Length: 331
Ligand code: NAI
Image (cartoon, rainbow, N blue to C red; front, side, top):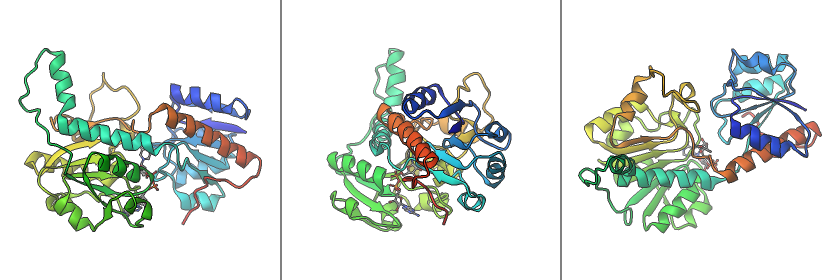
């Protein structure tokens, strides 16, 4: 089957080619993200393979279907960038990678938490300049602190388990509570208690219309003063301008994010020689108590291997007319 792979980086090519060795699909790689301008590149390809910041809105899906595409394969878990209703109407199947390595993302969330709390980013820069002063580097013990997990699915549960190992009290909120979370020794609570009690809040729920900006000026005002916020899920969960204000006032003690609402214009490319017009991210990057990583939480060898193998397997299932294990159905 001919597959147009968008937003293809060196590592995507390497791991997809390896996964495809026995499958024999024709992979055509494009550096460009999928959007209204680039969609023409997919003409004649029965499958497209896309990533987190590719746009598969109704217009793009219309053009894909018109060009002969029948399968959209996401090489990621989240699918907020695909208009599932339009895909269903056009008869396009959509698959994703349901599970690759929840450890990759949960462990990155922990890395961000440790770094922002113990100011590792600042210490790293200081000691490289032979500055061994400790002023401004004080953190707090995680042991005994209350950690709130919002979204207690696969990644949220792994994160919770690690934090329990640190001796934290773990509370959680999920629209669909699970026994798996409770059985770890964590407990569910309501958003109000998270605000009142959590020293650390880590977001692990999907971006949906319901969760858009769940962290906003109101919820930040109700949070415990000085709490740390970690977001490795999706940028749209957080109203970043409200977060900037909360950091300025000290209401939020620190922020560590791997995702950003406007990341499609920034992430996955080297902009170091460019003047970035996005004042919000620039302001965030100026805070000593904010860390930004560029959507790298998934980026471990184990995760990429599984993502690429699952994607090729899904295309093979589709080509063979088999049921699609990882199909996302609209509604
Ligand atoms: P999952 O589906 O196992 O868990 C998501 C949880 O969120 C579920 O328990 C679900 O019930 C809950 N949820 C749904 N709506 C909710 C709401 N309105 N309020 C509270 N909870 C709600 O997904 P998984 O694998 O744990 O991934 C979580 C998210 O992590 C993904 O949606 C994706 O956005 C993000 N992600 C980020 C990556 C990165 O590299 N930064 C990589 C992979 C995933």
